[in-house]
Image (cartoon, rainbow, N blue to C red):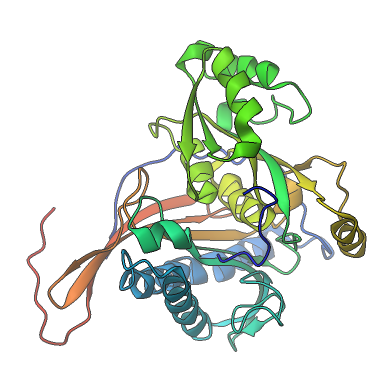
Length: 366
């Protein structure tokens, strides 16, 4: 996603299991009267089952398009290709979707802008997109560029302002046990206890920014280690919710729209995000008021992604710890996608071969 604001400083599913433990009871904004259990079951199946693999197709298409510009040094070309491909594919889905997290406001983004309507089908949904999360890292060929999308029922994803958000993301065993208002040291102690390990066994992901100098110092002073990343805190948040990734929490401030996407992923994985919106000036405070955002409130997973149904998909563009990047061969490419459904409680890793040339042939290897 290309932010319009600058910081003040600045194909087959695999059988790989991931532990999922969605423990919260999410309440959809603007909920209707209770439905009979049989009706709810049909709704879940018709929404998530119908869209989960189609959503994977959307992020695969965006990743394939963006990958053609990977390593060429032009982040605008990367973002433009991914955005155009994602928009075209969204318009082919059986949805009536509204973009609530997108490339910017209507006067800033030519497509997939906030409020844009996509699709022409039956399912009324809200959509959060980042066609290329990490445009600069993708342009430079660095790790963890990806295409990402979350889809929920209307009101199921918070319309977050384009600002910064202080974030804390922890894995399922620590969900509900930490607090963003506590000192860093207290949260690290609780996290270590939740994971049955010592504090000096922990690895904490933090964006490598000058504003995080004190946070980094304090984390290291406890004995915990720090993994600094240049960009891409959505995939970093996902890694927290996946056992075996080698990271145990994400801390620090990053984009608020990315916080909503991270919340959708956390909801499906049973991890937890806590976030606090940061107003850098009075103009942003006025925007908060107009959008009903409280800068003093700690927003949790169920606040940022309140939907009772949620589909989340991310496809790697460049290589990363959780997802492989797009790998091209003569006449085609291979993609690696993580796609999840909250109500259906299914997490899939999809390894797909795309034959783009009619004459392309490939030998499949496991």
